[in-house]
Amino acid sequence: MFPYLTIDNEINTQLGSTMKKLLAMVALMAGFTSTKALAGYDANVLGTLTGVFVYTNGDYIYFKLDTQPSHPSCDSSYFVIAETVPLERRQMLLSRLLMAYASKERVNIGYDSQGDCASGYIRVHRVG
Image 1 (cartoon, rainbow, N blue to C red):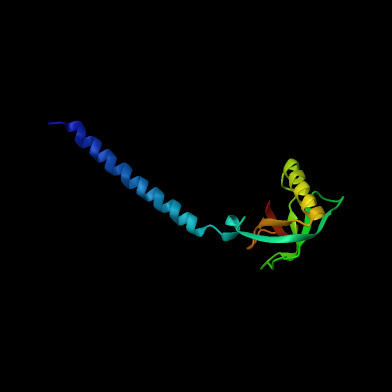
Image 2: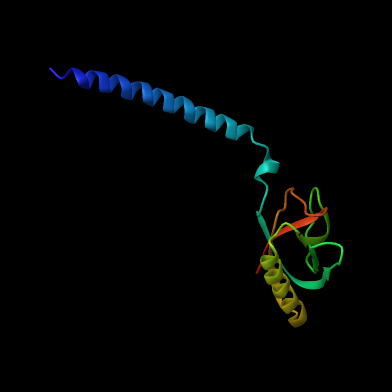
């Protein structure tokens, strides 16, 4: 009675099958993605700053807490705000660190606890 409905149903079935295959491929590819590519902000530590260090030969900011955590692949003697962080953000983070250092206020540092080092040290994602 309505022949175009039969054609539409066949097209919908084919599209549904294609979408299922596409989703399965995406899920499979996501499973093969390395954890290094997914590394990022995954931990926090609360502590008092024992030093904040900046150097003339780079745009990174080093600092250390009294509760400095260990790290499986980075040198854990310092946290680093990487030079790849935009200048305006680095300035805000440095201001926050210096205020906390001067007042001996405890800070909450968000960092990458698994990989992705910055200049060989623990990469910082948040200063709170």
